[in-house]
Length: 75
Image (cartoon, rainbow, N blue to C red; front, side):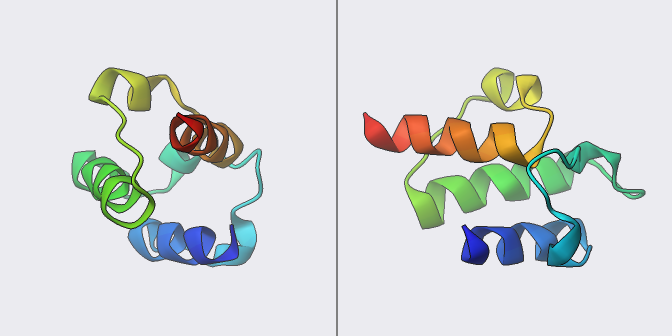
């Protein structure tokens, strides 16, 4: 989880310390589709988790993102 938060913080250009489970990652000032696709690529390439764009758009917080990633990896 720590490694994932550090990678996510790099994409979002924020300090990893702010990435609590309740953090709404789309609330970063410069949020855009490139950040979203970067997160999808990170999940796929580093964690073997494939999410569709539709699934990803339903996710609002870091905690939901991690939970979805864990569910996908259980399958």
